[in-house]
Length: 129
Image 1 (cartoon, rainbow, N blue to C red):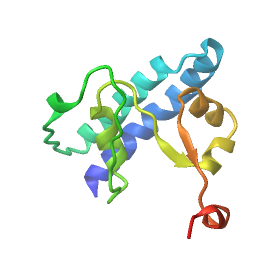
Image 2: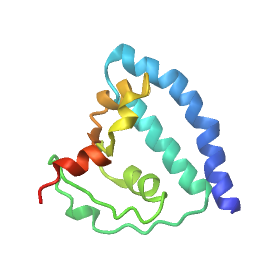
Image 3: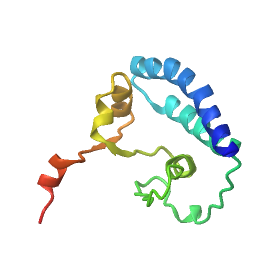
């Protein structure tokens, strides 16, 4: 429980400050790469503060300069903050469509080229039988 509190503390201490400064900056310059790097640093700092040990192997098998798809089974809420900062380069993320409607944040997620996914009853109607 204490590890979770440390992780949450790092995110609550650094996240809002980064958002208040980084999102308007990103919107002004139209480039999300600096905000992405800071967000990945904060994400990794929270994981480290929680004392989570990560053993990564096979990075040498990731082709340089090519797009790749990385999938996680999302067993816990820690999958994204543990996995995404370890991926080489900049990653895009699938997220629920509703998050794109949040003012300012939605615009930043579009700049980051995040991919919205329709969920719920409307998405079920489009599913092939």
